[in-house]
Image 1 (cartoon, rainbow, N blue to C red):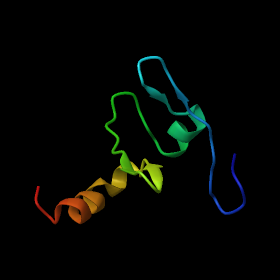
Image 2 (image 1 turned 30 degrees about the vertical axis):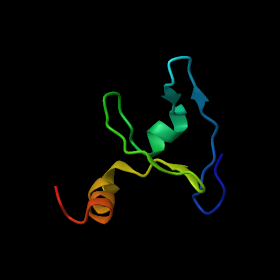
Image 3 (image 1 turned 180 degrees about the vertical axis):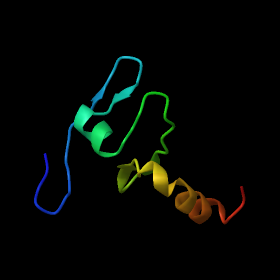
Length: 68
């Protein structure tokens, strides 16, 4: 579902093996391909976020203080 600001909302299904199924439209919009590695960020109070692939370095730097 898209609104006029380019923000989206979908539902996702967790399978019996704990795998998350990302909706096709979301995979297309964010260019998620089979075999891609995604980063999942979580906070018990704020929930889970799956940021775009092109922001990995930014999050890595923020979380680990520039140590690669």
